[in-house]
Amino acid sequence: MAEERPNIARFRFYEELNDFLPKHQRKRTFDYAFQGRPAVKNAIEGMGVPHTEVDLILVNGASVGFGHPPHHGDFVSVYPVFEAFDISPLVKLHKRPLRHPAFILDVHLGTLARRLRLLGFDALYQNDYTDPEIVAIAAREGRIILTRDRGLLCRKAVTRGCRIRAQAPELQVREVLDRFDLYGQAAPFTRCTACNGRLDPVPKGEVSAALPPGTRRSHDAFFRCRACGKIYWEGAHFSRLNALVKQYLNRRPERC
Image (cartoon, rainbow, N blue to C red):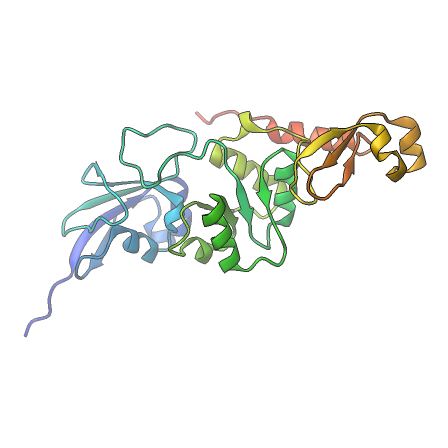
């Protein structure tokens, strides 16, 4: 009996999705051979692209969902997440853009978590989170997973996530701001960098006993974390942190 010939669909991935592909498949159209009727999501992840990185799939020009099975001869175009743009007239793969995102970060991104908190973003992090815990918390609280682990984003229960490509924290911050278009949503110095809790103004009299003598004499404005009780004020390090915030929020010019 002759072997059944495989079906062939043609795939093309766009923009940063190419980072997940081997070099010979990047920024070009290539053939994908398959048997049966696999969902397009399985095909995409089989090529190494996490489904959380994908926001739009076009098959022969028509938008489809992850469960759509490609057919022989189909042309499949795969696009990255469009957080900064409204493409709601198209059939998207996720319910809606996350305009007020909350994050959870894996164990390798502690510095990024603190920098996001400095900018006022909800960034949950513990250095002992396991991958199943991260996935469960993200699903329960509607958080976006930030990770450098591609495998974590391929888990079925994950609906929103971003693989952080940069290694330096400064570049990681910029990557998140650009990816989710967060420049207009920053609220610097409103979260505790230690625990992620909200900061509230607190009268000096309520915290005076816990202050160093020099701070008690030279400062009058204080903030306290709702969660852990840590006290903040504009100390000697504030000018450095403020300069760092301005550097992060200085949106880079668009490329021509």
